Image 1 (cartoon, rainbow, N blue to C red):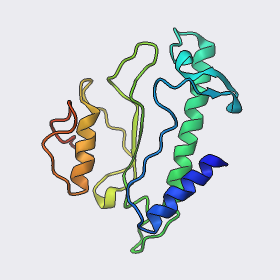
Image 2: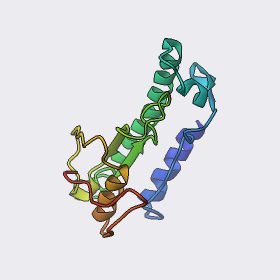
Image 3: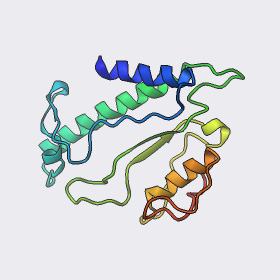
Image 4: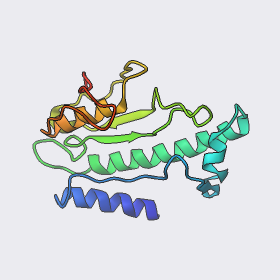
Length: 167
Protein backbone atom coordinates (compact mmCIF):
# COMPACT_ATOMS: atom_id res chain seq x y z
CA UNK A 1 0.00 0.00 0.00
CA UNK A 2 2.89 2.35 0.77
CA UNK A 3 4.42 1.89 -2.69
CA UNK A 4 1.05 2.51 -4.34
CA UNK A 5 0.71 5.73 -2.35
CA UNK A 6 4.19 6.86 -3.44
CA UNK A 7 3.37 6.01 -7.06
CA UNK A 8 0.11 7.94 -6.88
CA UNK A 9 1.88 10.93 -5.31
CA UNK A 10 4.44 10.99 -8.13
CA UNK A 11 1.69 10.85 -10.76
CA UNK A 12 -0.34 13.61 -9.07
CA UNK A 13 2.75 15.83 -8.81
CA UNK A 14 3.43 15.40 -12.54
CA UNK A 15 -0.25 15.76 -13.44
CA UNK A 16 -0.43 19.10 -11.60
CA UNK A 17 2.87 20.25 -13.12
CA UNK A 18 4.42 20.61 -9.68
CA UNK A 19 7.30 18.68 -11.21
CA UNK A 20 8.10 16.77 -14.37
CA UNK A 21 11.00 14.90 -12.83
CA UNK A 22 10.71 12.24 -10.14
CA UNK A 23 12.97 9.50 -8.92
CA UNK A 24 12.14 6.28 -7.14
CA UNK A 25 14.62 3.61 -6.15
CA UNK A 26 13.66 0.28 -4.60
CA UNK A 27 17.16 -0.11 -3.18
CA UNK A 28 20.77 0.25 -4.20
CA UNK A 29 22.81 -2.64 -5.57
CA UNK A 30 24.36 -3.29 -2.17
CA UNK A 31 21.01 -3.41 -0.38
CA UNK A 32 20.42 -6.39 1.86
CA UNK A 33 16.68 -5.75 1.89
CA UNK A 34 14.68 -8.84 2.75
CA UNK A 35 11.75 -9.47 0.41
CA UNK A 36 10.07 -12.15 2.53
CA UNK A 37 6.83 -10.15 2.24
CA UNK A 38 6.61 -11.39 -1.39
CA UNK A 39 7.92 -14.89 -0.68
CA UNK A 40 11.56 -14.05 -1.44
CA UNK A 41 13.38 -14.36 1.90
CA UNK A 42 17.00 -13.49 2.53
CA UNK A 43 19.33 -10.57 1.97
CA UNK A 44 18.95 -9.35 -1.63
CA UNK A 45 22.62 -8.52 -2.13
CA UNK A 46 23.79 -11.88 -0.82
CA UNK A 47 21.22 -13.74 -2.95
CA UNK A 48 22.46 -11.72 -5.95
CA UNK A 49 25.76 -13.61 -5.60
CA UNK A 50 23.76 -16.65 -6.71
CA UNK A 51 26.67 -18.81 -7.98
CA UNK A 52 24.19 -20.49 -10.31
CA UNK A 53 22.15 -21.81 -7.38
CA UNK A 54 18.60 -22.36 -8.69
CA UNK A 55 16.98 -21.44 -5.35
CA UNK A 56 18.73 -18.05 -5.36
CA UNK A 57 17.93 -17.52 -9.06
CA UNK A 58 14.27 -18.27 -8.34
CA UNK A 59 14.24 -15.72 -5.50
CA UNK A 60 15.83 -13.13 -7.82
CA UNK A 61 13.15 -13.80 -10.45
CA UNK A 62 10.44 -13.30 -7.81
CA UNK A 63 11.98 -9.97 -6.77
CA UNK A 64 12.40 -8.92 -10.41
CA UNK A 65 8.75 -9.69 -11.24
CA UNK A 66 7.63 -7.69 -8.19
CA UNK A 67 9.74 -4.69 -9.22
CA UNK A 68 8.59 -4.81 -12.86
CA UNK A 69 4.97 -5.13 -11.72
CA UNK A 70 5.33 -1.87 -9.75
CA UNK A 71 6.92 -0.23 -12.79
CA UNK A 72 4.00 -1.40 -14.95
CA UNK A 73 1.52 0.01 -12.41
CA UNK A 74 3.28 3.38 -12.64
CA UNK A 75 3.04 3.31 -16.44
CA UNK A 76 -0.67 2.43 -16.30
CA UNK A 77 -1.34 5.27 -13.85
CA UNK A 78 0.53 7.72 -16.10
CA UNK A 79 -1.30 6.48 -19.19
CA UNK A 80 -4.63 7.15 -17.46
CA UNK A 81 -3.84 10.88 -17.17
CA UNK A 82 -5.26 12.72 -20.19
CA UNK A 83 -3.14 15.74 -21.14
CA UNK A 84 -5.30 16.77 -24.09
CA UNK A 85 -4.88 16.35 -27.84
CA UNK A 86 -5.20 12.59 -27.41
CA UNK A 87 -1.98 12.39 -25.37
CA UNK A 88 -1.47 10.96 -21.93
CA UNK A 89 1.09 11.81 -19.30
CA UNK A 90 2.88 8.63 -20.37
CA UNK A 91 2.94 9.82 -24.01
CA UNK A 92 4.64 13.03 -22.88
CA UNK A 93 7.18 11.38 -20.59
CA UNK A 94 10.31 9.26 -20.57
CA UNK A 95 10.51 6.73 -17.77
CA UNK A 96 13.80 4.96 -17.16
CA UNK A 97 13.81 1.62 -15.33
CA UNK A 98 17.04 -0.25 -14.90
CA UNK A 99 19.79 -1.66 -12.79
CA UNK A 100 23.37 -0.58 -12.31
CA UNK A 101 24.54 -4.16 -12.71
CA UNK A 102 23.87 -6.94 -15.23
CA UNK A 103 24.52 -9.89 -12.96
CA UNK A 104 25.26 -9.78 -9.24
CA UNK A 105 27.33 -12.92 -9.40
CA UNK A 106 29.86 -11.47 -11.82
CA UNK A 107 29.45 -7.78 -10.89
CA UNK A 108 29.24 -7.05 -14.62
CA UNK A 109 28.43 -3.43 -15.47
CA UNK A 110 27.87 -3.93 -19.20
CA UNK A 111 24.79 -5.19 -21.03
CA UNK A 112 22.60 -3.55 -18.39
CA UNK A 113 18.90 -4.43 -18.19
CA UNK A 114 17.14 -1.16 -19.10
CA UNK A 115 13.57 -0.28 -20.01
CA UNK A 116 12.74 3.15 -21.40
CA UNK A 117 9.00 3.73 -21.49
CA UNK A 118 6.81 6.57 -22.68
CA UNK A 119 6.64 8.62 -25.82
CA UNK A 120 8.93 11.49 -24.88
CA UNK A 121 6.43 13.99 -26.25
CA UNK A 122 6.52 12.27 -29.63
CA UNK A 123 10.31 11.94 -29.76
CA UNK A 124 10.50 8.27 -28.74
CA UNK A 125 9.26 5.29 -30.72
CA UNK A 126 7.92 2.89 -28.09
CA UNK A 127 7.42 -0.86 -28.40
CA UNK A 128 10.89 -1.76 -29.63
CA UNK A 129 13.77 -3.84 -28.34
CA UNK A 130 17.04 -2.15 -29.24
CA UNK A 131 20.39 -3.80 -28.64
CA UNK A 132 23.43 -1.54 -28.57
CA UNK A 133 27.06 -2.59 -28.54
CA UNK A 134 28.35 -4.39 -25.44
CA UNK A 135 30.49 -1.44 -24.33
CA UNK A 136 27.90 1.30 -24.94
CA UNK A 137 27.72 3.32 -21.71
CA UNK A 138 24.28 3.91 -20.21
CA UNK A 139 25.40 7.54 -19.82
CA UNK A 140 24.87 7.88 -23.60
CA UNK A 141 21.21 7.04 -23.03
CA UNK A 142 21.01 9.76 -20.39
CA UNK A 143 22.53 12.20 -22.89
CA UNK A 144 19.82 11.25 -25.40
CA UNK A 145 17.14 11.77 -22.77
CA UNK A 146 18.56 15.19 -21.90
CA UNK A 147 18.64 16.13 -25.59
CA UNK A 148 14.97 15.18 -25.81
CA UNK A 149 14.31 17.72 -23.02
CA UNK A 150 16.22 20.36 -24.99
CA UNK A 151 19.36 20.14 -22.86
CA UNK A 152 22.37 19.79 -25.13
CA UNK A 153 25.54 18.49 -23.55
CA UNK A 154 28.83 17.10 -24.81
CA UNK A 155 29.27 14.66 -21.94
CA UNK A 156 27.51 12.99 -19.04
CA UNK A 157 29.51 11.63 -16.12
CA UNK A 158 32.76 9.88 -16.89
CA UNK A 159 31.49 7.64 -19.70
CA UNK A 160 28.88 9.58 -21.68
CA UNK A 161 30.41 11.19 -24.75
CA UNK A 162 27.78 10.75 -27.46
CA UNK A 163 24.01 10.78 -27.71
CA UNK A 164 22.59 7.29 -28.04
CA UNK A 165 20.97 7.06 -31.49
CA UNK A 166 17.64 5.62 -32.62
CA UNK A 167 15.45 6.20 -29.59
